[in-house]
Image 1 (cartoon, rainbow, N blue to C red):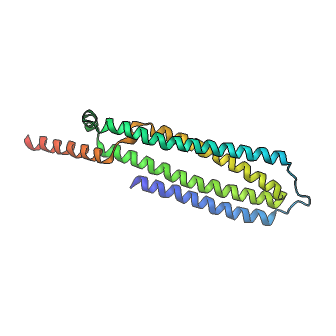
Image 2: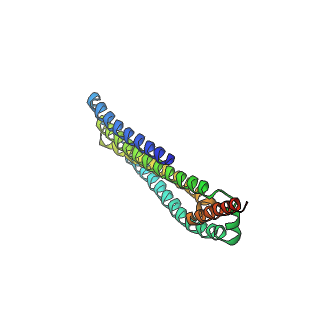
Length: 197
Protein backbone atom coordinates (compact mmCIF):
# COMPACT_ATOMS: atom_id res chain seq x y z
CA UNK A 1 0.00 0.00 0.00
CA UNK A 2 2.76 2.46 0.92
CA UNK A 3 4.80 1.90 -2.24
CA UNK A 4 1.60 2.20 -4.29
CA UNK A 5 1.08 5.74 -2.99
CA UNK A 6 4.70 6.63 -3.73
CA UNK A 7 4.33 5.27 -7.26
CA UNK A 8 1.11 7.24 -7.81
CA UNK A 9 2.90 10.36 -6.60
CA UNK A 10 5.86 9.80 -8.92
CA UNK A 11 3.60 9.28 -11.94
CA UNK A 12 1.41 12.26 -11.01
CA UNK A 13 4.48 14.52 -10.68
CA UNK A 14 5.69 13.31 -14.07
CA UNK A 15 2.31 14.02 -15.70
CA UNK A 16 2.07 17.48 -14.13
CA UNK A 17 5.60 18.29 -15.28
CA UNK A 18 4.81 17.19 -18.84
CA UNK A 19 1.65 19.32 -18.92
CA UNK A 20 3.47 22.37 -17.57
CA UNK A 21 6.25 21.92 -20.12
CA UNK A 22 3.69 21.90 -22.94
CA UNK A 23 1.97 24.96 -21.48
CA UNK A 24 5.35 26.70 -21.19
CA UNK A 25 6.14 25.96 -24.82
CA UNK A 26 2.89 27.56 -25.99
CA UNK A 27 3.46 30.54 -23.70
CA UNK A 28 7.05 31.06 -24.86
CA UNK A 29 6.15 30.76 -28.56
CA UNK A 30 3.54 33.51 -28.14
CA UNK A 31 6.05 35.76 -26.33
CA UNK A 32 9.09 35.01 -28.48
CA UNK A 33 9.44 36.37 -32.00
CA UNK A 34 11.50 34.48 -34.57
CA UNK A 35 14.84 36.05 -35.41
CA UNK A 36 14.93 37.86 -38.74
CA UNK A 37 17.92 35.88 -39.94
CA UNK A 38 17.83 32.17 -39.24
CA UNK A 39 20.91 30.62 -37.64
CA UNK A 40 23.04 28.45 -39.83
CA UNK A 41 24.74 25.33 -38.56
CA UNK A 42 27.77 23.93 -40.33
CA UNK A 43 27.39 20.52 -41.88
CA UNK A 44 30.46 19.34 -39.95
CA UNK A 45 28.87 20.27 -36.62
CA UNK A 46 25.69 18.44 -37.52
CA UNK A 47 27.69 15.41 -38.68
CA UNK A 48 29.63 15.35 -35.39
CA UNK A 49 26.45 15.61 -33.33
CA UNK A 50 24.86 12.76 -35.28
CA UNK A 51 27.99 10.68 -34.67
CA UNK A 52 27.77 11.38 -30.93
CA UNK A 53 24.10 10.38 -30.94
CA UNK A 54 24.93 7.16 -32.81
CA UNK A 55 27.69 6.26 -30.34
CA UNK A 56 25.54 6.97 -27.29
CA UNK A 57 22.66 4.99 -28.79
CA UNK A 58 25.02 2.09 -29.46
CA UNK A 59 26.34 2.19 -25.90
CA UNK A 60 22.77 2.27 -24.61
CA UNK A 61 21.94 -0.82 -26.70
CA UNK A 62 25.09 -2.64 -25.54
CA UNK A 63 24.42 -1.93 -21.86
CA UNK A 64 20.77 -2.97 -22.26
CA UNK A 65 21.93 -6.24 -23.85
CA UNK A 66 24.39 -6.79 -21.01
CA UNK A 67 21.61 -6.07 -18.53
CA UNK A 68 19.37 -8.75 -19.98
CA UNK A 69 22.26 -11.25 -19.89
CA UNK A 70 23.20 -10.32 -16.32
CA UNK A 71 19.60 -10.69 -15.18
CA UNK A 72 19.40 -14.18 -16.70
CA UNK A 73 22.78 -15.37 -15.39
CA UNK A 74 22.55 -13.85 -11.92
CA UNK A 75 18.99 -15.11 -11.59
CA UNK A 76 20.15 -18.62 -12.45
CA UNK A 77 23.07 -18.73 -10.02
CA UNK A 78 21.57 -16.84 -7.11
CA UNK A 79 18.25 -18.58 -7.63
CA UNK A 80 20.07 -21.89 -7.29
CA UNK A 81 21.74 -20.76 -4.07
CA UNK A 82 18.59 -19.27 -2.56
CA UNK A 83 16.47 -22.28 -3.43
CA UNK A 84 19.03 -24.82 -2.17
CA UNK A 85 18.56 -26.59 1.16
CA UNK A 86 21.14 -24.38 2.89
CA UNK A 87 19.73 -21.22 1.28
CA UNK A 88 16.21 -22.05 2.42
CA UNK A 89 17.44 -22.58 5.98
CA UNK A 90 19.34 -19.32 5.95
CA UNK A 91 16.43 -17.32 4.57
CA UNK A 92 14.17 -19.08 7.04
CA UNK A 93 15.89 -16.95 9.67
CA UNK A 94 14.73 -13.75 7.92
CA UNK A 95 11.23 -12.32 8.09
CA UNK A 96 10.24 -13.31 4.55
CA UNK A 97 7.28 -10.97 4.16
CA UNK A 98 9.45 -7.96 4.96
CA UNK A 99 12.17 -8.92 2.50
CA UNK A 100 9.64 -9.72 -0.24
CA UNK A 101 7.69 -6.50 0.26
CA UNK A 102 10.87 -4.42 0.32
CA UNK A 103 12.26 -5.93 -2.87
CA UNK A 104 8.93 -5.73 -4.69
CA UNK A 105 8.24 -2.16 -3.58
CA UNK A 106 11.71 -0.96 -4.52
CA UNK A 107 11.48 -2.52 -7.99
CA UNK A 108 8.08 -0.93 -8.62
CA UNK A 109 9.26 2.49 -7.46
CA UNK A 110 12.31 2.27 -9.74
CA UNK A 111 10.10 1.32 -12.69
CA UNK A 112 7.72 4.22 -11.99
CA UNK A 113 10.63 6.67 -11.72
CA UNK A 114 12.04 5.36 -14.99
CA UNK A 115 8.73 5.74 -16.81
CA UNK A 116 8.03 9.23 -15.45
CA UNK A 117 11.59 10.31 -16.17
CA UNK A 118 11.43 9.10 -19.76
CA UNK A 119 8.17 10.97 -20.34
CA UNK A 120 9.56 14.20 -18.88
CA UNK A 121 12.83 13.93 -20.83
CA UNK A 122 11.04 13.20 -24.09
CA UNK A 123 8.67 16.13 -23.61
CA UNK A 124 11.54 18.41 -22.58
CA UNK A 125 13.41 17.47 -25.74
CA UNK A 126 10.38 18.11 -27.93
CA UNK A 127 9.61 21.44 -26.28
CA UNK A 128 13.21 22.65 -26.43
CA UNK A 129 13.59 21.61 -30.06
CA UNK A 130 10.34 23.37 -30.94
CA UNK A 131 11.38 26.60 -29.20
CA UNK A 132 14.84 26.62 -30.79
CA UNK A 133 13.33 25.95 -34.23
CA UNK A 134 10.80 28.73 -33.70
CA UNK A 135 13.42 31.27 -32.63
CA UNK A 136 16.54 30.29 -34.60
CA UNK A 137 15.37 28.17 -37.53
CA UNK A 138 15.12 24.54 -38.54
CA UNK A 139 18.87 23.82 -38.67
CA UNK A 140 19.38 24.99 -35.10
CA UNK A 141 16.35 22.95 -34.06
CA UNK A 142 17.74 19.87 -35.77
CA UNK A 143 21.12 20.08 -34.02
CA UNK A 144 19.33 20.69 -30.71
CA UNK A 145 17.20 17.60 -31.28
CA UNK A 146 20.25 15.47 -32.10
CA UNK A 147 22.15 16.75 -29.04
CA UNK A 148 19.25 16.12 -26.70
CA UNK A 149 18.79 12.66 -28.24
CA UNK A 150 22.43 11.86 -27.44
CA UNK A 151 21.94 13.10 -23.88
CA UNK A 152 18.85 10.90 -23.56
CA UNK A 153 20.80 7.85 -24.66
CA UNK A 154 23.55 8.67 -22.16
CA UNK A 155 20.98 8.88 -19.37
CA UNK A 156 19.46 5.59 -20.55
CA UNK A 157 22.89 3.99 -20.38
CA UNK A 158 23.43 5.25 -16.84
CA UNK A 159 20.02 3.94 -15.79
CA UNK A 160 20.78 0.52 -17.31
CA UNK A 161 24.10 0.42 -15.40
CA UNK A 162 22.13 1.12 -12.21
CA UNK A 163 19.83 -1.78 -13.08
CA UNK A 164 22.82 -4.06 -13.73
CA UNK A 165 24.11 -3.29 -10.23
CA UNK A 166 20.66 -4.07 -8.85
CA UNK A 167 20.50 -7.32 -10.86
CA UNK A 168 23.84 -8.47 -9.45
CA UNK A 169 22.42 -8.15 -5.95
CA UNK A 170 21.55 -11.71 -4.81
CA UNK A 171 18.40 -10.57 -3.02
CA UNK A 172 16.86 -9.63 -6.37
CA UNK A 173 16.87 -13.27 -7.51
CA UNK A 174 14.87 -14.70 -4.63
CA UNK A 175 11.68 -16.30 -5.74
CA UNK A 176 8.64 -14.79 -4.05
CA UNK A 177 7.26 -18.30 -3.56
CA UNK A 178 10.38 -19.33 -1.63
CA UNK A 179 10.12 -16.31 0.64
CA UNK A 180 6.41 -16.85 1.18
CA UNK A 181 6.92 -20.55 1.97
CA UNK A 182 9.78 -19.75 4.32
CA UNK A 183 7.70 -17.11 6.10
CA UNK A 184 4.74 -19.49 6.36
CA UNK A 185 6.94 -22.27 7.77
CA UNK A 186 8.49 -19.88 10.29
CA UNK A 187 5.05 -18.66 11.37
CA UNK A 188 3.81 -22.26 11.65
CA UNK A 189 6.83 -23.22 13.74
CA UNK A 190 6.23 -20.24 16.05
CA UNK A 191 2.56 -21.18 16.38
CA UNK A 192 3.44 -24.83 17.18
CA UNK A 193 5.98 -23.70 19.75
CA UNK A 194 3.41 -21.46 21.44
CA UNK A 195 0.75 -24.21 21.41
CA UNK A 196 3.10 -26.84 22.85
CA UNK A 197 3.88 -24.60 25.85
